[in-house]
Length: 478
Ligand code: SF4
Image 1 (tube, protein in one colour):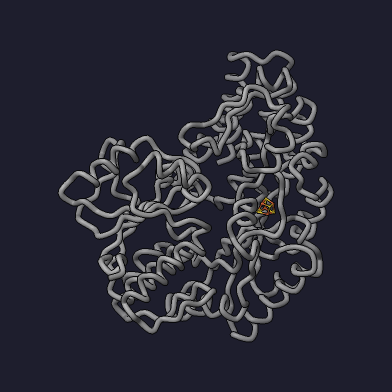
Image 2 (image 1 turned 45 degrees about the vertical axis):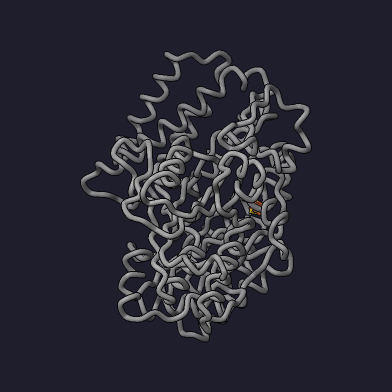
């Protein structure tokens, strides 16, 4: 008898949910593949619960309120402290349950995971788009259903009752999340995401057939009255010749299906051309996020972005002309940054922040699997493997003297100002447009960081004053 036959109820836990909640990210519906999994399993009467909200009061442990046949644990790049004791409880308690692991870390560090948790029943390796489909495939064949195992994660039709549950689970807001591709064809040197798919996804990068993507959008529009679609692809348009082709396919499919939506997407700034935006803006493109990463020439080279500062400006100007709201992600410091590069980056981001919302990652997360690590490993001072990541992430010092001594002021100030700006926004009586507010607050924040980076010898007192002056400016903005 196939051992999968016994799984009639499954609990799914995302161990990064604490971190995601702190960063105000949604949890399971960020990746539509979880939604797809739920749809497939409930249709064949397997009970599926996502358990991210059921932490105990002190948040030190996870509470399983009932018995499940299988616990599927999704782990990204770190293992939280509470996980070991939680597993022990599960294995020894009355509600003993089989445990499967899946996600980034169990794939990269399968052997170490097995050593750390020897009682684990199975590790589903590979990107979720593959491992969850394989899990479903096993459950289907056991249950002998006619559901077709297709490459595109088509959710299919649901009964009226299941539609209500679907809405409750995945459409708490009026935003529909869609994923139209897997992986990324590029290979920026700092990017663990692309490296992971290059290593563990046989196709490296795949764009799903557009008609199938649009069928899913249609379902959200017609069945659930959702008209704002957020594409979760890391790089919706791909690269090279694919860019124009994909934009054209998307626009055409939306028109042919008479779908009037507004949508948000993420892409590289080098895929933003007049031709592409002229195709996408008329069919609903209103928001774009782009990986700016840096406005320092040298840093962009180290990042292997294959983009220059001007690429970002050209994209921003094209989008501004069309009235599209832009969010740009920047990384302030990598291990080899110099103080001059930091200033160049901050000043460039500050200028950009007059036009777009800048979202900052203060210190680059360094993954040992990336090309950045391989290229510069020997030059990075004081590397320490992060235990909770099983050595996949490395802590480091900066090679530049000023940065190694004072970057902490930049980092602390940036994080504090961001948090304060969010808190102030929440307390506002008449909340103005969140995007505009955060855009201006980010601009003030960058101004403050430039002031600190310009000081030869910043100290607690001076930095405190800069923080207070800046928050006062943000407060007045209300
Ligand atoms: S374009 Fe984005 S997703 Fe692709 S490799 Fe670069 S950073 Fe990663």
